[in-house]
Length: 486
Ligand code: SF4
Ligand code: SF4
Image 1 (cartoon, rainbow, N blue to C red):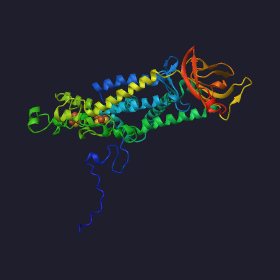
Image 2: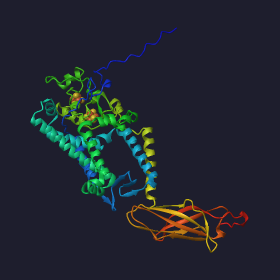
Image 3: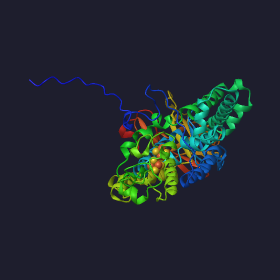
Image 4: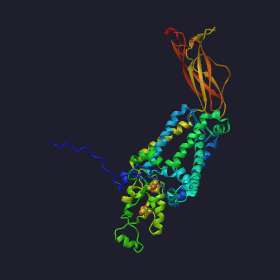
């Protein structure tokens, strides 16, 4: 008989192995606060310029109007959505679903090709954290070593004042960000009303205002990089999307290893002869990393591709007269075999899917009707015979106006001999609103089929048919042989 298998034994954490522990937790599992050093360099400059543009769009977006409509409005509560000035209703959910698919496919294609480029350059979390909150922190508390010293210092009046001032600024900024998000949901006009009106009338709005403020304050003042490493699903599934051709922020281990400190007396040739690479183990790349990782360990889930380590290492290379790019944007194959980015079948498949989805999306947006109506028989109403011998059915018609102008709408009976009468005033649908009215359809007995008669109603606006509605008309059961064809 084979010997019984040993019960599995939990292995001790190997603290020398980066895979065995988080960079942001100590041996007791407590949070290790990250103090990334200030960074400067060409990537940081480019990201700063881009972040200005993104912040302008982010904070200015709610006030931008296209054709009288907001640039972006995602009113989930009232199920009203405006994207790039186009109003979308719940009836347009299919367009939304395709837009969402495009977004997801776009991210997949992008990630497969360029890793987490999104995270490092345009993700609002990174932009706000690194380009706004981090810079404020540097301005108030100084660079990383000063922040560390301040954290370790006793609680004096000066320290309390600086810390309190920083938190107050963070809270104020979180309030602005929270309100910006709220104005993307309810619109700036509604937000203004909440702020200026009697608070008792807007308890729900004020609650959300407070909630958003506290959430953003919590994220940017305390939670920080953990939002990317613990919460963000994108960071979690990126490892399934990357392959050896993906461009990532990578350490060129072939060029850098064996790493070793630089001794002044050693020339580059002597270092090379001793088997050393270009990495002088100065850990500048680690000290600027906002997620606290060492990129020399290879691609890691925590890396948000912020490029800080590239800039830091380039500065070191410049100082020691070595070419920059020891850490750079490169693929694994690029580093191992000197290959350039190539179109793999997987990438081509994703890209094709993306093109198809974008085409379908554009087609649906372009052919989307400005007005959408639906016609239903009034519940519980049966047919009636009129004094002139015709039969009538009562219907309810709902018309959604997706434009920002009034739409006068008429209805015409298209396929049967009879009449259609709108009950009440003419239908004029206000902009971005839904109107509901009743219509009475009367058919000649000669038009009726046995049981149910299909009826077609044209919806007209400005003399042009904009939609054709189909419904059924209930009449008396006539003998099949006696019923004429429509
Ligand atoms: S900054 Fe460059 S040289 Fe310094 S440790 Fe990092 S990779 Fe090595
Ligand atoms: S490893 Fe480099 S690119 Fe990745 S998060 Fe750290 S500093 Fe940014």
